[in-house]
Length: 331
Image 1 (cartoon, rainbow, N blue to C red):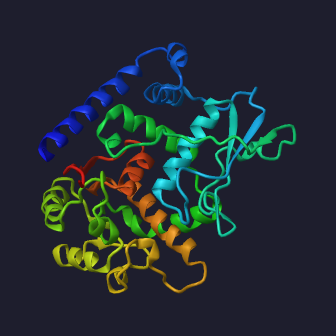
Image 2 (cartoon, rainbow, N blue to C red):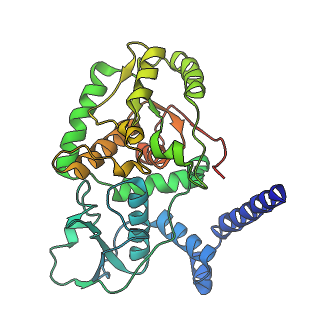
């Protein structure tokens, strides 16, 4: 019975995926007649995003987004992608979006990013609207990186709307100068541990073993003539394993590791506290900087996660080689 259910689920997922991609070929004017149907709405936003060239002068309302699909208490890629979906839907509805999702009196977006349309915020002629709850169903899936059209779309969205604020940019550029100094050719690698591996979240991609990553790396480092490996991971013990396998080749940036996730018997990685002032900010900054550094490497290998997908979107299809393991999903 379980096998039959799994088979039927796969068939349904495939059929819905085919329908969704087929709708994208229809004219937007025709799709808008059937708005309100989830798949049609997604197709409308897809076509709008593909054709987006900037804010129309007739847009005279600011939409102040104060909440997302979830209650966010820190910055991660789920938050970022959710906000990008809301940005697109707001624009589609004729608003200029302003992200103001807060935790502990801090605007989570502003911690690391510039507002997408900051040049409009000082114009008193614009009416601010807060009471319309715009929630978007439009966000990248873990399959988006394997579909050229989806990848191209999300590269464009990230390029348009994900802009580092000055403080974040200064921090990350300093780290990039160290990682990529002397013209190094660097292979980016992302390996998740902690809650992703222990919880095996339903519907999320299965992560590769270190042995699987090592095996591919040994071939590609030589084939692509890479000098170093930049490793993005939250566990010190994973870094140590890499240093054993690739002695003298591992580059890391400043970060606090989460190995006490296991010692403290935490359920989620966000429960780990490093007992420093502004801990949430620095955890977010270290995490985000590692994703940006990955995006600037010459190639990328790793598990399929929100972070590795974001690195591909930020890279804007410039990698010489990518391999994010496609091992199915946790069930």
